[in-house]
Image 1 (cartoon, rainbow, N blue to C red):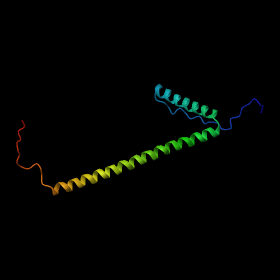
Image 2: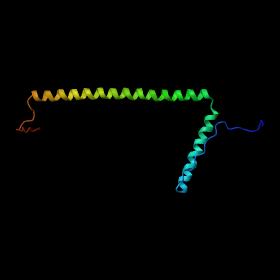
Image 3: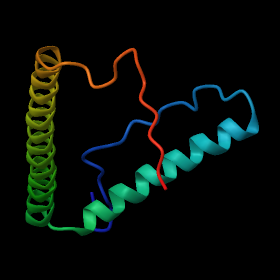
Length: 111
């Protein structure tokens, strides 16, 4: 083998086109493949350390939002519990006091 020959140590297996039924499906298939190869080309330009730290940063970013959402859910549950407790206490108080709107009505004239 000469120095100018390139050997592909990791040959990519070509998958068949999966029998597209119409030209639009064929177009979409080829566009998807083009996007896959473009992303692989861009990934090859970045050093391994950059990719590792980028992946770690993405995971931490997602975890930070999980913590934020979990805290918000906890606060909403606390507020809901407080509102239910107050509503329950109010119902108990209504039974102890006489009704302010009885069967008879009083007409008040204002001058």
